[in-house]
Image (cartoon, rainbow, N blue to C red; front, side):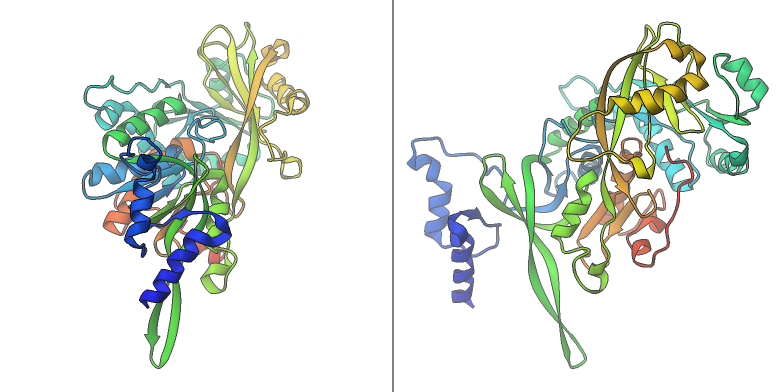
Length: 473
């Protein structure tokens, strides 16, 4: 066995002529350890205080955006000294991250109790952010939050569903006002109400905030708690085999054991973990496939149905527009707009139809889509927008759940040490804090303690029982 372990170690170092730093616990001869640890000294450089990538952690979080950072925060908040945790992020500048390219909306107007509660928790978190994310000897966190509310314009054929949603939201404590056409005309006189039967308006806790500021506040707090942020890309998982007896039969179970990581220095490292959390956003499906999810037999046959979907956000200028009293307005066509600062500046957009989904190979903006689809819808609903001027635009990715456009959270039925927090389909920014707390509860308490998210587990994919949210934007 010792000889076999030595052969495996040599194979790790010598395959394809490239060296891979193995995880803690793997067999390595003393001379290999000395060569690795003191290589810098041999070259006349100071001895590094720590490896670029840790060899072993209790929890590995793949994805350092808002959801991954929220998971890290809640785990370390609960056990600041008892758990080692690493956040792996391939782009620490977050130039392609969904978190930083979001419009930053926060609304309580959903059709599912889980989503309403997650959003309400985000509001509470932002309102008390200094209690949560302040760091000793650092300036208190500042995350601008505009409480202007959401306004949904409801066509006649959706009134029944709207009333059901409103009853649920009110029961859960959300402050949502139902507005008749007359009340809409009185409160928002700039709207053209053709085809609108009803409106729902968030009176408290809704609006929009700066997701980049929230992400930076999480990172600063996490690093003060000992979370290690590592720049690198997950290339594959390594498995270990565990045998069990069922009567007279022997079964082999492959267990996720370590992650092979390409570091920012171009070298390959290996990190052993007890638990891995998939917070990779739009690329969560790729991470799952590296664990053979969707590529194997039995419970491994069902893939994680998450893929990137590109969405455009357009910045416009209209000095004679609705002004500062305008909320985040969602038309029945799902075209939206909101103010962006003062002086007649707004952002807007609209999700494309399934047939017109843009290519996700890059973050290039389709300006024709604005002129052909977004602007006509905006000008129809708000006539003052006929004279707008397009100033700039950007694109970002949704982590789109193709199965039911809803959160997938919890353990995988085969890889019990892999936890999902994926597929929010555009709601990740506003639900990240609550999802992070829920994942912490699964790890430490083995159950959801505050918001019951049990029906949003991976099992619904296997049994093909979708859970649909009616208020997708």
